[in-house]
Image 1 (cartoon, rainbow, N blue to C red):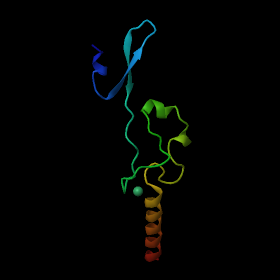
Image 2 (cartoon, protein in one colour; image 1 turned 120 degrees about the horizontal axis):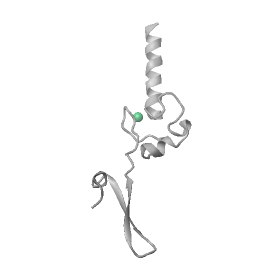
Image 3 (cartoon, rainbow, N blue to C red; image 1 turned 45 degrees about the vertical axis):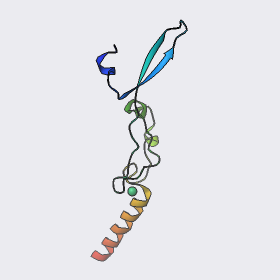
Image 4 (cartoon, rainbow, N blue to C red; image 1 turned 60 degrees about the vertical axis):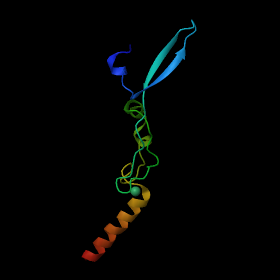
Length: 93
Ligand SMILES: [Zn+2]
């Protein structure tokens, strides 16, 4: 019986055959889902998919695109939102 923390199905099981002929199970956390755009819900590019421990090993610049709202909005939604904001500013003056 595996220890209680590993009895969940949110860990992946890999059966590994050992040199002595015995088979053991190696456990690995499942990857979380893709990062999604806040507005349209589309998949975000440039945002790696991995467990928090794997993400922590990356450089800051490798974790999300280095533009405003990088890792939050997709480029299409950002373009539209910026245009809207500028139009609003122009209308105000
Ligand atoms: Zn979007």
